[in-house]
Image (cartoon, rainbow, N blue to C red):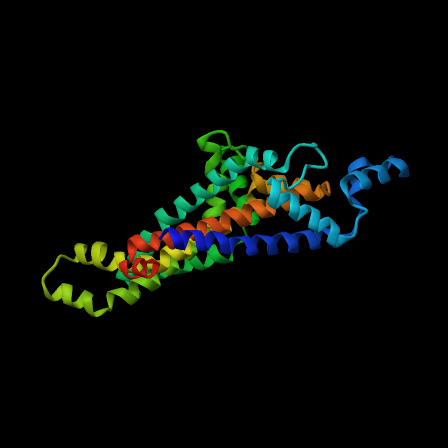
Length: 309
């Protein structure tokens, strides 16, 4: 197992280098001069050239990327913000807990609602509950996060005045952004749980358990659910990574002080080191989540655990 973890971590290195190269290339090709954006229209040409020289913006592309990669690998330095002049890692670590908290709450909502609804839909296939659940799941998949967020604000903050429309410092303030972010994840988890349960409940070992006279609750919750969880765990891991990356719109709408909102503000200000650092941070988090999901497999399915040895 240890060898497997080390091998997966080593595989993350070329992935992160590729992500860094793609982001660096896109920002390099983006129209506009970051020096003029940072210093303002009233800055002199001499001040702009001093800024470009100090930040290495006059160097060729390959030199800029090489210097960036060398500092990141040898010193763990992914740059300093053009705006605040502070370390990118320090800036991201200040807001990353809010993004993790938002994604974790959204994922918890998706699991607590999606798995039971998917199970009941599979058990009561073609019933009214199944039909309504699948229709709502389709609506949830089709509904953009920013539009749902605005609807939630209009209903619960403006009309009913039950919940705050911004901030993330209280439990009440966490409800609306978590619900908005979790809508698509709920739909995905529900559909995957239903499909997996329908496949498992028709398996031979389920018929054998019924023929032995075991209770239906034991068959569903112990035998069927345990075997149906593997694809659901896969989806939950991928969805959690997507929530980390997809929190940008949610954080912007609800003014959540997270990585997503920081990246949006950095893009507007042409703060390239902060944008690169934010994307790398999300890529690292996504890779670690996938690794954790693979390790969880070992405790769900012993056959997969045997492959790690």
